[in-house]
Image (cartoon, rainbow, N blue to C red):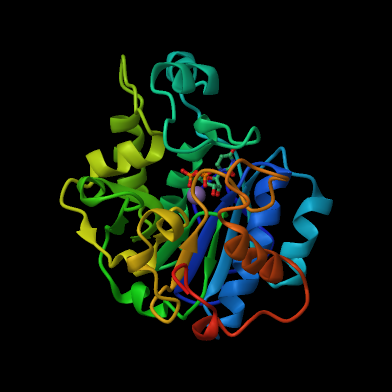
Length: 280
Ligand code: UDP
Ligand code: MN
């Protein structure tokens, strides 16, 4: 493992699912995510990259689930970079017109995802946002090359032009990490949708994963024909989070929020393939 990262134990094998938690709210998300991965039968490590601000008590449920905790810090980006990507500025310049980000979402924190390239104890990793659930086994992705991600589909065909950085495949490598830092924080750099815009720029030849490897929650009401519980391997709660109480789309997304709550708790979870779809 690279300098500056502190793990609570050695790696358990060559592959890992990796997520990021920079505050207590995303630790709630990560608990549901790690539990969902374990329920798919995967034996790969579940790594939670966490930054200094997250209290031990908020990380405790992740330890109980067997996650490997790796302590790190946000990237040491320049003051100019940090100011350019401050929440008020990002939201002011390019307002989110399709949905809302929760108050606990700090855009600058997203860039810390790039630290997964420092986890060189693994041959291949799959990054998954802390606001996602794995519903069917996705271990096959460990054999996929760098860099694969699904398109950012939640409204219509134009969405296929962009990728979504909530699920992607990567090969940790310190040289890649250093090239990324050099490309990221250049004079005047501004990445409109943070890590997502940067990763699409850094990997212009990104390989497309099926939308079912990163199904965005708005598909439920915007493109219900695309919904198929038997096919959806990762469900991603982009924009509003299921643990925000309440949020503007909570009524529309009630069945998905109930599903997330089942995974976030300690009780049974429903049989996914038998859940009713949006048109039923
Ligand atoms: N994240 C975090 N703290 C933050 C913002 C983001 O830990 O303040 C991490 C977390 O893993 C989260 C991911 O970065 O899932 C991306 O942010 P989010 O999922 O909120 O963005 P969206 O999917 O809504 O675009
Ligand atoms: Mn997300």
